[in-house]
Image 1: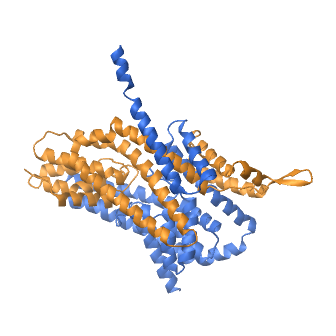
Image 2: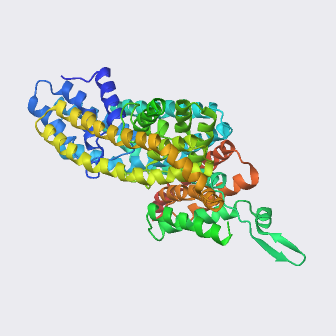
Image 3: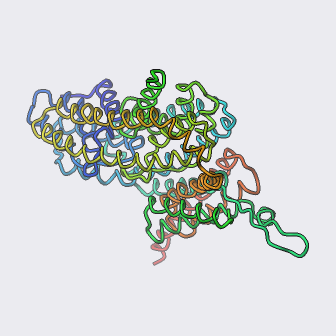
Length: 268
Length: 264
């Protein structure tokens, strides 16, 4: 009865944590990072069966792409499935592939919105506020805080995935988690609204002649809605991306164009 | 030949490699891309290497603001943030440039860096093919080499050489260029620096906003910061409360169809 030990799982997690994107390409992305993570598992479970060992490496070398820090739970689940298979349970290669592919979408959704959309921006803006004058404390806070949270989460999720095995899939992609994900999404959207207000800055030196005195447009804008021009800039960029499907690189060029023309015309 | 600058340029190149998205050595993206790779952290590291920590951090904060919400999903991105951070901040410190100018330098280098990043992604297809073959033959060693080792040699060269050379050769060039540039152009760079976060935030909105009504929450966050408090911590606590209320509300709502079934 081949049984995975804690040290095999740790090796597998570490391989994933390090090498997930090591040979990333447009066609296979994290495929071989996943295979790399399954090497200690296959070695332990199929050490007396070279053909099954070979098959295990092959079935885990197919296209794969997930948010790597949250996605480690799939590696844990796969490890427990491999253990069941090695102990005689009938599991086809296609089952492994479909478990991985059906989970990578929802998990990337959760991972990208919570880590890239909430955790990193919030930690960064706190750190930036502390470090604005050149104080290194904020930077150190970000480094220690982020690594502790993200590495801890990735390790915890791998081990949890292994413990619960296939039964954890429902908890992750089921209806309950969808509600949780939607709620997290709302949290993320509110936070990026705040980020937009803190970090987008646009102002105009324009003055409108008003009888004897002239009216400074920016002061008027600030008096009823501070940051209004910045908000317009965000909505404009978002409109171009989501409604007109214009690529980010092209929008960058458009923003450069707006800065150049705006300054030449004296609007900004 | 300036030996000190050469060593500094080399070190900056090496950190740019360690912070790259595919570098494995600091727990992959966790300690690499998302930590060492952030412009804020790059500011501290480049400042330490060049002996001016305060300027490094100040410029790091400025470049970080422009890239506050830079996201990369599924291997696609609009800029290569580590090239931008390490190349831009290093040249900014060496040339004594302002924040706005440093941000523009970083953006320029980031666009060039994206070509090199994409080149690496294309070259990796070659290693992928060899790794596939190794998997078919059941060779774990072959997968380790073609996933973990060989692609990293290419990645190392594609980072250390261009960034090191740009820092080593670019210093004098950028300084004389800046002396030559009229104030109006510097002002354009400042305006651009203020506008750039709009693009990153728009990309995040595209990721998170799935329904039209979600836009209300975006405006809520904006209005909170503008009118109530400029603290991101208090906004996050507020957002957590709202999210929890919404979670509870949807929770109570879902069983409704079942009771309808019973009536029928």
